[in-house]
Amino acid sequence: MDDLIASTGVGFRAVTNPSFMDNILRQAEAIKNQSMFFSPIDGDRKLPTCATRDIAAVAARLLLDPSWSGQDHVAVLGPEDMSFNEMAQIMSEVLGKPVRYQQIPFEAYKARFIAFGMSEAMAQGMTDMAAAKNNGLDNAEPRTPENTTPTSFRQWSEEVLKPVLN
Image (cartoon, rainbow, N blue to C red; front, side):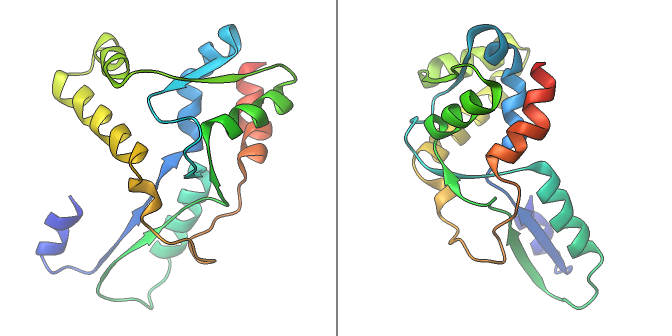
C-alpha cells in the first residue's frame, strides 16, 4: 500500500512497526488457562516489539509536525529486541506464575487462523509474515534513539496484560 501511495507523488510518512506487544492479548485465554502462548517463530529469536500506545504517540507527533515534506518512513521499534522466551520469563515474574512459550509448526499456525474464520489467502498471508519475521524481516531496520520508544515489555505486561488476566 505504501508503494501505491508513493506512486501518486503525495507527501507522506509511513509509520512502520514490528510486532505489537498488544498482539499477546489474543492469547490471553491460553496464558490464563494453560500458562502458555504460541507462535511459529523461534523462541530465541530476538525481535523488536512495540506497544500500540507508543505507535499512537509517534503517529500523533508526526501528524502535528508541519515541518516535513516528501516521502519517508518512520520506524517504531520499542525499547529493545526481545525473544518470546524472554517475554515468557517477564510474564512469569509479572503474573506470579510460570508462563511458557511454545513454538508451533507454521501449518498449525495457519490452520488456527482458518479455524477462526480467516480466508485461506489471509491465513497464508499471516503465516508468510510470521515466516518472514522468523527469517529476520523485523531486524532489517537499524535501531536508533529516534525509533526506540519507551514502553518496555515488563511495563506493558504490568499495565495492560496483568489487568486483562485478573
